[in-house]
Length: 161
Ligand code: SME
Image (cartoon, rainbow, N blue to C red; front, side):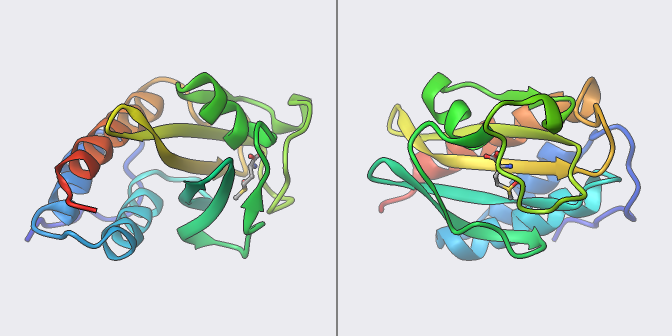
């Protein structure tokens, strides 16, 4: 089993390796991604929410997460999450107060990154990470989360669902 570092890694370095480690050998989506949400909250300092939404039809439905209770459903194209699904690429918002239509689940959130996850070439859901700091997701953290998203998508493709 992977030995986890203490909370506070500023660089996001090692995040993808830690994500790979908790996914390895697990085939249950909820169980595995519950651990991934915990790994992300542990690895990136200044994160108040980290978790998943799964695409069910045209709606996003809340999956495993760390943080305050969140909205359980997000309509098509709504919020930062809906934007990431529509564009099928990561969306980074340095100041959520300036994002039209941002959905505030935790009023402490100031910046956010949403990474779409893919299975079989289509969007499976999103990884959503919030921070109470402005511009938290730039540089190494953004790279680490995008890489984590690619690792999760590769793992999803390997599953028989
Ligand atoms: N802020 C997101 C909604 C989900 S919560 O942050 C957990 C959005 O605008 O899509």
